[in-house]
Image (cartoon, rainbow, N blue to C red):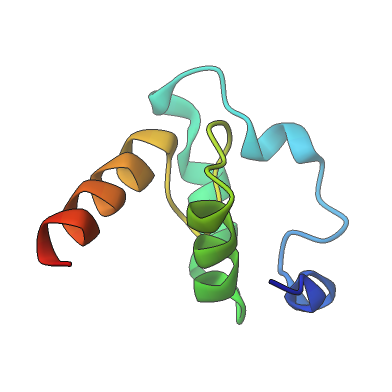
Length: 76
């Protein structure tokens, strides 16, 4: 999967640490950036396809991405 979507990501230029919060209580700043991002879906699909285990991708936490994987397996 091509990652050309990255050049349009709202997170470009933002400190990456924002997207790797220590606890679930600290995810809101990252999710706020993702909410306004034009390539949020592409980012999420990239994270799902590559099994990204850390960080906020496409506005989702690792736990939320695991849930998406489970739901997709059930409906497949």
